[in-house]
Length: 299
Image (cartoon, rainbow, N blue to C red; front, side, top):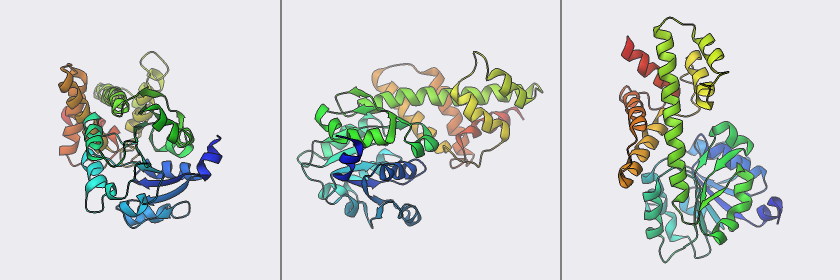
């Protein structure tokens, strides 16, 4: 079945319209999926009203949906969506598929499965990577964990949202484990870019030249190219990925590593930088501001 054919037959509830959730919902709608959308922020709901039906609550959005996509920020928010004041658990059925695309860690997925026992067993764990720009073009990486039949039920939607959506495990939670490794790498690479450019600045080098020259050699990385440019430009209020995301995600990395007894010293050092930025009140600024955290330490 083509994506277009599947879309016409699939009612999708979309819960969570943040910086990545909004372009993802728009991409799904552009693929022909019938979207009913909810976010706690009324302005976010209205911002997608041209392509989706706004709902007054998460429960209203989920009622009668074939697939419920959850794209919230934290494990606590996921729990609230499920069993909070307007929790969706009361309106899910044994045929509903819950597609969790948030980065919330494997423990939150395990808790979700327990919460939904006797309600629905169809849970697919599919955290995303790629940022808002790729979300808007359907070019995300999605790491998928779930039973074969459940993944098949949401495959057309995944293919509309992602350039690559591999199944990384048959158990919900496996996607989160992959995403934790992804976030360890991303978090360390951003911190390393900030540290390198802070050192370059402290030595009196031209940051633009450092970024241009080193970006063509073995030291290059996606984060050095992308976040490094924002560091050079001082574009910390052009928020494409808020610092608070890595405060949360590096905490999930630390939690997962502790659970299996794995030492992650580089991740721990990066986590400390993000936490320092948070303590400075920079949660809602771009995560490239770790450069300023490091430069502040040098001043």
